[in-house]
Image (cartoon, rainbow, N blue to C red; front, side, top):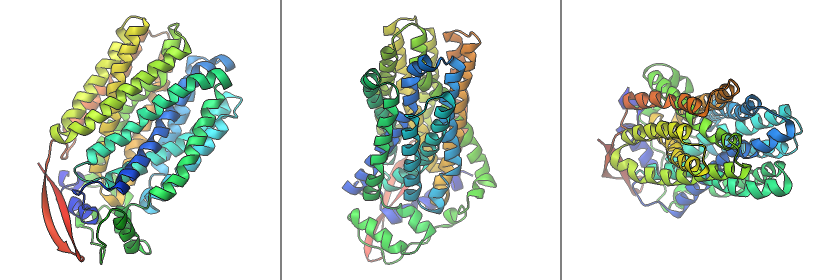
Length: 467
């Protein structure tokens, strides 16, 4: 199973034949990755938009913890549905059309969220917004993995994940003055504007993935591949290389649910569920928990901002260290750290300094945990099913993301104290540690070796990973 699943030499050499991934990242590739970082920042802004506005909404509409938990989960449920149903479009129609559709849904959902006057209306709009976020994450994660060079792939994916805390941090800094001046509706207006701006940028900076074009071979595929190669300052191809058997055998989404791929898909699904249950509880409830402890809304928002600043540091460190120490080892350390940090958040005294320090530690491991998931997924699935497989993993993660905040709301409503419900929501990280320790594949430290190949009128470098 490992040789078929985790991107061994056959699948890697075909991918590298198209993109020559050991070469230096060009301005075009950096711009494509940068745009995906910005799109992922919308995810951070969107998820935290409810967390930032929850105290004000709760006061305006007289909502209890269970109702706020349901509001959190409405958006997350939409993300799960979007990941399962929209991300396969990235394998059938292309990465770029899927991204554009999702940005449209995100813009509409955010805009109408600002006009809502009841819990039901806002929950519906949060679901629509979630559809866009859930679908777009699989596509941009795939695009980053396919456009980055082999040497910089982990760092590029880490930078994409870094978009989340960047969006959440900037959203937090903007939310305080916006809510004070214009009310909570203004946060959603800002989100709609930011999502709308991304559409023309995608049309300009993000052509279709060459991996999709080379595997699906739509009309004018070779010409489109060569246009992308020209933007990467690489010589054109005379013909499109044939995919190897390892990729050709995974040409249909159903192949992910049977045969040797079934076990890997199931492990990835369960891993994402476990991690996201803990992560999204922490993300969603931190401002509200601090508000319940008697702190101002601003303190809650600033604590969430500190979490995301710490997360930015964690993402960068992960990207720099992954190739040296191995994804498996770093993931185990990260998941253990996340569980311990959340436990500490539940145990520290109800003092602003102690709580913000614990939130900072949780944020460091929280965003790094998300980066671990993003980096694992592209290694599991071949190009023909990569967006679908990534969507399955991320969609499963949204199951945990829905359950985590909602269960926390129920536990709070039942009278559980902070230490107990934080410990309960940290427990899934134990399962995540076990899964990442046994999941098959080359998740350990690697070295690269370079081969030379002459063909198609140009010399391409083919990079292979070797344990």
